[in-house]
Length: 401
Image (cartoon, rainbow, N blue to C red; front, side):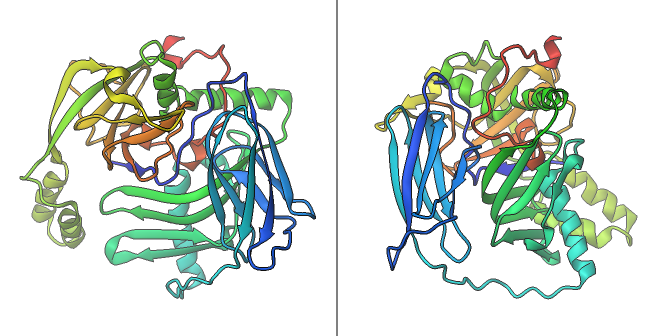
């Protein structure tokens, strides 16, 4: 089955400038009264840097790796405050004013406990996945989630007003997740989500920490985080990445996905011949594709911008990225693979905008800019790493062992 992951969340890669760290300080006050606000959460989204404000509203985040981050200030009863910060050697001062939240009207959801349990079970599969790591993830406050399933559209939606607390015992993280919006569109096999994450290290023995580190490394190498960092560092080829251009044209002989799914539902138990016919159309490729075999380089696709430390990635058609140090273990129906090409991990990038922006650390800082298919789409929340994760230099990917 084809699986897409939309980049609604800025996925920031760990820094390359490891010798330098930055500091962010500031104060949080009430927007109307200007009174200081205590015990407000302040954190860098997708990282392990977070704190709460003191009685006088002040806060400090120290030892932050250089790069561009979303600084989040949040407290129940107030609108979230978000500011992009570009961390370097110079201290950053952020003074935030929180406005009282205006209650937004959402759909009124009336469901039985059985309906909620069914929706929650679906959510866990789409949110965490079904991997061995996913089975070691647990949400401690599941009833803080609002879940809606629209059967006619095969659409599952979820959101929360407060943090969802997650324990990932596979990777050794405790995650506080403000889930603004989650959608699983089963008609188009599209998963998208918006939210803010704060990672904390779980306590563990030395042997447990070593196991967690090996698992984290195995996820990191060959990932999109690894790829973007390799582009900035100029070592993409030595790191095992090969980039090519993939041209696609819609297959006009294949009906729209929504039509196929509706017919499959209709004939599932009443007409075997019709079911077989529509299954054959479902298995038909969505595209006519041509892979240009000549590899492309970052020099052809990456340009500097007028903002220091921020780069633009642009390419024609689609970018076909192969990681030659791991073999693919999962079949992706709509990922084109020539018969004479080895079964390495492969991902396809499609731009939703003329270009995607990323920083000197390899962090993608433009939201809604790209779509991932293939290997990079299969890792869900259970396999996500914080942006400040740095792997051990001694690790060797499995294919090279």
